[in-house]
Amino acid sequence: MLEMQRIFTKQKRYIFFLLAVCALGWGFTQYSTIFAGLALGSLFGLYNFWILTRRMEKFDRVLSGEKGRAGLGTAFRFGSGIAAVAIALALPEYIHLISTVIGLMIPYVLLVVERIMFHARNQ
Image (cartoon, rainbow, N blue to C red; front, side, top):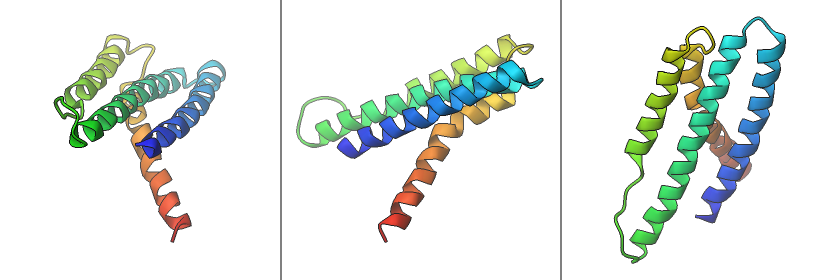
């Protein structure tokens, strides 16, 4: 699971760069609600990815023989996605709903792209 920690560290770096771009876009363009939605969704998406990383480590320990219950935290991840959408729905004048949903998926898209690049380099 050391590999998963390395991937999560890279994901954090990418998301923080995206958040910096979102902050610039929010401050200097007329599309502030879209950039706010992307930032909100990306933050919740990173949180979801962090939950997934933690749960995968625990899942690995349980499969290795340690006592406990094996689960991947799906309910927590769904709940945080619902919370992000609820915030966007509660503040539609500040946060764009569709960009929030897109932002929720950004960490997973980055994961797929990173894995494709990894396999392309190692073949």
